[in-house]
Structures are given as structure tokens and as C-alpha cells.
Amino acid sequence: MSIRQEFDTWATDGRDKGMEDRHWHTAKHALARMPVEPGDTILDLGTGSGYAVRALRETKCAGRTYGLDGSPEMARNARDYTDSLDSGYVVGDFDDLPFADNSVDHVWTMEAFYYAKDPHNTLREVARVLKPGGTFYCAVNYYEENVHSHHWQDNITVEMTRWTREQYRDAFHEAGLSVAAQDHIGDFDVEIPDEDAFPYEGFDTREDMVERYRELGTLLTVGVAH
Ligand SMILES: C[S@@+](CC[C@H](N)C(=O)[O-])C[C@H]1O[C@@H](n2cnc3c(N)ncnc32)[C@H](O)[C@@H]1O
Image (cartoon, rainbow, N blue to C red; front, side, top):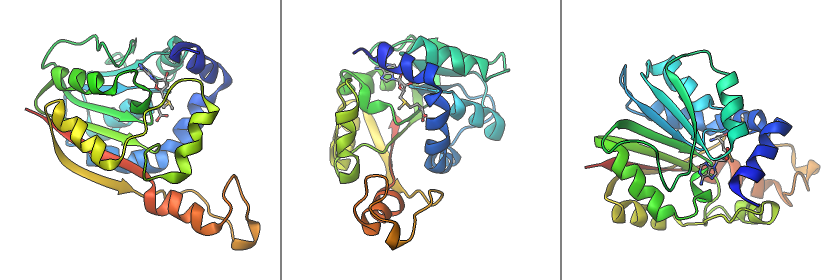
């Protein structure tokens, strides 16, 4: 199944809002760290419901914001949830960003980068569209050290890339992005039941669930363009 087919179904099922609710637990902390100044142009790759760019407009007075998604239904929903004329939602692919060289101040992506058909090319595209000094905030919960995420590939037909922390850093460098930071953001909002409730939602032990959410959480890699 293509990205479009897979995620159009998710959007029409209402799963865009479900993702927003879950991802917000850690996304809000990563978004708060972005050095966005009033008026900056922001691009969100795999925008889903579009919540991240709306938050950057509300909290940091971002200027033009663009949410790009390969699913027309996701882009349509995101547009419906937004009332600002300065927010554009675009259907497109990570491998061919419809933006000019050196035109974007900051790029954000949450739980989407690993769906890129050619993640190395996506990073080159990000480096191309960013202005010198612009940042790329790349947040993922599916990565090699997060063993609790490995089975996710079984639930989706789109091929996913599972890199280690080091592979992220190496790939950023190869694409011409310096790595300014790499960090785990724990999810302290998700409720973790008492020991006697396990097995619970696929976790055999409470320790596994604590490791998944509190310790491993979201891997954030921050690149800076030259
Ligand atoms: C798991 S959702 C995450 C959505 C949102 N960022 C969030 O945090 O809830 C991944 C999104 O990325 C989009 N996507 C995946 N691969 C893509 C690609 N190669 N080009 C454009 N969009 C893509 C999907 O259509 C989907 O809306």
C-alpha cells in the first residue's frame, strides 16, 4: 500500500487526532526547545492533523507555516482544523520538497521521518531548503534502541527505516547538517498502571512499559544547516 492509501484511511478514521493526542506528550517539549523567532517560516514534514505548526504559531508567533503530507486526506483535515491564512497545508513527498533553496527557517517532523522512501535524500532535501543556521528538529519513537517499537512494522504495509541514534547522527552529517543535540524525551503523561495490571497493552512487565515511555521515549535529533 502507498503512503497515500495507508494514511488517507487513517485520516478518514479520525486517527489523525488520536496521533496528535499521543504524540503531544513529548512533542510539546521538543517544540518548546525550537529557537523560533516571530515571523519565522516553518515546515512540518508529515504534518498529520497539523497540530505542531499551529502550536508554533500560537506559542512563538511563527510567520508562514507549512504542513506537508503525502496523504491528501490528512492535509484536508489539517486545513479544516486551522483558521489562519498564514498556514498552508501541502500534499507532497519528503523526497522532493516543493520549496526553494534556503527558504525555510526551521523544519520539524514528529513520528514521520522513518516513512521516507529514501531517508538520506530527505535529509539532503531538508538541508537544501533550510536557510544557513536553520534547524531540523527530528522526533521519532520508532528507532533501534527502542526495542518496544520494533513490532510496529508488522502493523503497517509502508516500509519503515529503523536507525540507531548513531545512524541518525551519521546521516545528518552526510547530508551536511551539523548535529547540535540528540536527546531522549520521556513521556510522563501516559498513565502506567500498577504491577498487578500486567500484561497490559502489549507490555509483559511494568518495567518494560516504564522503559518504553519514561526512559526511552522520543528520540530527538537536532540538525543545523550551514
Ligand atoms: C504517524 S503520522 C504522524 C503525524 C504527525 N506528525 C503527528 O505527530 O501526529 C505520519 C504522517 O507522515 C505522512 N508521511 C509519511 N511518509 C511520507 C512521505 N514520504 N511524504 C509525505 N508525507 C509522509 C503520513 O501521511 C502521515 O500523515
